Length: 127
Image (tube, rainbow, N blue to C red; front, side, top):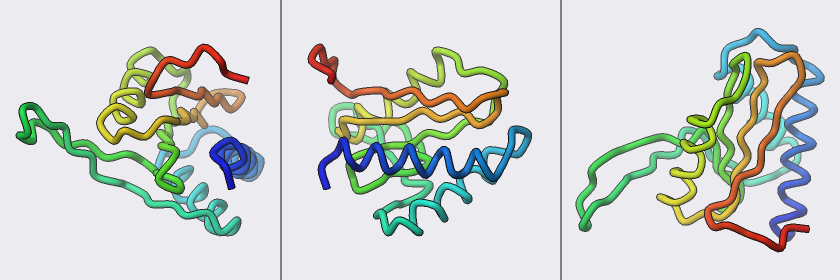
């Protein structure tokens, strides 16, 4: 399965979660539910994946990605009223540190679900 097909399947799983769980729960609830949905589709997924930040080959920071699917997509989950630029920057930094090209920033906390796709590198030929 190519990356675009994988992203479409992940987004369908995200919508399945939102259909069953309205806004108001903590982030971990949505993360656990999304994990179940991804596993039902037999998609390879890891949660709470450690990310090390290096400077001159020395670890200078540690973070955790909410989910990585198929070693090709980082999913960062939020449960806030509205996403802000800091959330987007966080995901792009995770993409840069892991050298993974595609990320999905997902907010379950608003009145409607919000999904933003982010890239490690600027792409001007997006279909």
